[in-house]
Image (cartoon, rainbow, N blue to C red):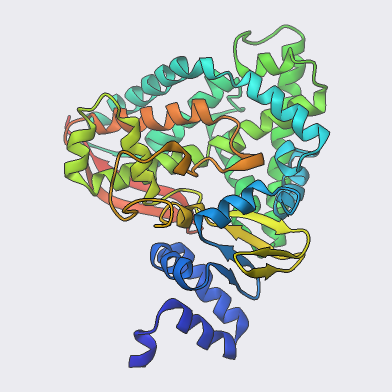
Length: 402
């Protein structure tokens, strides 16, 4: 027992693998949730392309970016069919370098105009201040559901033009679908069925909204209106509109929570941040210490040699941006909080062919919501972060001064 308690992760894994391969995989899955920094550091040094009975994890910066930039080898077939099933039609992020992917991606980059950033930032700040003002008299706020998700849902309503039947329903749709696509590694059929049901509700709602838009009812300046004017057919408008909240309502608040927690853990850094005109850089360096999406799933379509290891065709691969952003071969002093890191070392929005299309407004919303919170007096932790499925921040209570 003493020997086992002092083993490294790989020794524990190898010992367990010899007795029970699925138990060994269970260890890895738990470590990726609870000890990911330590696990990934060990893997980068000793086994950077780490094969388990269920999946292979890629941990070094150069290898992670290679996987994410070789879409003809490492495809999104890991989650694309689930997105298609939920949305009732092909979604560009579930396709690799097809004509439909290139066309829809280009149109979405156009309608998500980088010129909107200032207005979106102002909107996020206003929504955040409204939520904070409402909570101030109580002296505390549960920031996941009272601040960060309402900000994201408000951006969906007012900027994307997708309020949902109500915010709670839109929130339920996104959580259900994203859980299946990015947390249901073992393919639980009940989780998949719930995703398909939620997607059918969302797309039915969007078809009704599209009919109203085409009849001249609805705002004229939001992303939905631009997409309707793009000339895409009904299926393409509905599926691409559905993709907007799926890409933001979970990842945006998730990033806000993780960045806030990391800044509150560093009072001296936070004191500098709230007086610095360039607040955003503190958010991104804080988020590096606990990114919301730590792993990006791919399927290896043919035998491929990576870092001296052959990954067989058909392997489920997890590229680990969270590990790559601590790779000392690329980042100086990766364990230190530094504000001079170049943006190309940040992998929060993916990399390569499937990098986030809404990166410009998303960066503004995330940073401004966190900034408005941390500018308030007396912000302090009352209850630490709890996470649904070990992934999605679901509760985080902070104190405020009235």
